[in-house]
Figure (cartoon, rainbow, N blue to C red):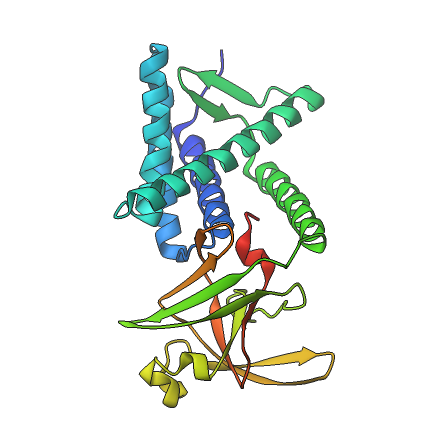
Length: 272
């Protein structure tokens, strides 16, 4: 008979939920502050106390599992838009399944007794140091897979990029370019390079120093280097014209000169 320590249960689930929520935000390109992510992970960690419940019928067990996943997702991303909430919930569950499969494989090949099943929940009989090491390895492997997939990505789709700041919006034809690897050195977020004329509908563009998150970002290309003004919009939407899909992107906007397309990294279009 295994002993379950409540403090270990809560701390491990806090870490795991933080990792899952952060991964879900990255996969869906949704802005999620560190404080809100921590609060949501804590809410999810509290649901792990259901491990103390007795064995339950299958239907009730499934309902509790869904609620345990829905609570941290709702706290992190909100439920004002049902479609977006269900999308985040689906991605969160997929990431959870991948993590569970990774842990199960680790237990199977190592022969160690790391998982304790009780009712509808799982208790990880696992040190925090080992957990951090394993999740770091898993993240590295996913990152390698993402880079390999990007190498073979097709960029011949038609896109439209919409930027919103307050009540003002700007739009421009989008171009997915694998050569655009520009990221903000402070936040690590991708930068979408917009033509200045396309942003003219945003009044603050005439005094860019007043734009939220405004700073000068150094860049380098095959033709030279320079400094690009960037700012943080309230929302960025990428529309795929051919597939009729809309994606919210957590990215900064760079103010370039005279160009006909908003250039962005294909990474913004994909999970991972």
